[in-house]
Amino acid sequence: MTEASCWQALPALILSAMTEQNPALPDKDCPLCPRLVSYRQTNQAAQPDWFNAPVPCFGDPQAEFLIVGLAPGVTGANRTGRPFTGDWAGDLLYDTLAQFGFSSDTYDKHIDDGLSLNNCMITNAVRCVPPQNKPIGAEITACRPFLLNRIESLKNLKAILSLGRISHESVLRSFGVKLKDAAFAHGAKHDVGGYKLYDSYHCSRYNTNTRRLTPEMFADVFATIKADLAASA
Ligand code: URA
Image (cartoon, rainbow, N blue to C red; front, side, top):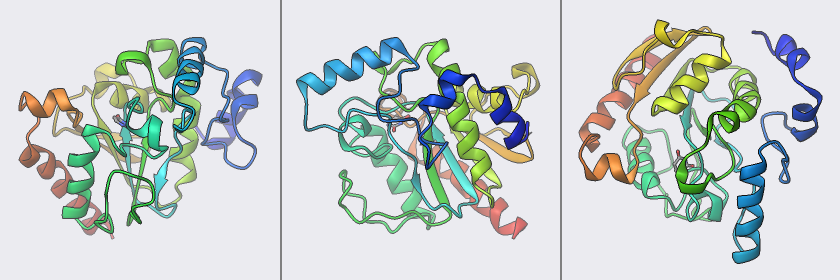
């Protein structure tokens, strides 16, 4: 779907939730998901100093490489306002980005750490924190136009890395690709929407503690992406 046809297909409610300056960013009071709005309001009341809003994308607007996570963690990205920042999952993700030269290597779990990304951007399939880290289908669907706008506004984009099955499936659905035509598997690579889509298990606390995902397995995926980007330059 082109950007223009995507805009035409969007219902008025979704259009009203997009910030005027940046259609890839939901408004801070985005009303689309009643359960997430209610959770946001609970968090705002309990923790007024936290970010408590849809978490914006972070990184290089000229990026060739986009990482799509699941959703902000309540005490991590939802608290700090930057994807994976202060989250358990961020420790491995930002270490690995530094290892492959995709960052300034100054990650320190807060948004004033001076971190910048090189040729890379990070976003989430769902921008608001979900209860128990589990977005429901309607929430993933409601947030998909923001994901598609993010992807289509990166004019140099070549590689998308999905962290986990939910991210993978939301990217496929963004482009109308059937799930059976590009099954999720750690280390897999697919052609989707004119981009290369790479899959990894999510770098969550559960996956890393159980060693379903080891730092070496994660690094292998980044090594492939780095090599493919270099070969396509
Ligand atoms: N934090 C994020 O921003 N995204 C995830 O998928 C997990 C933690």
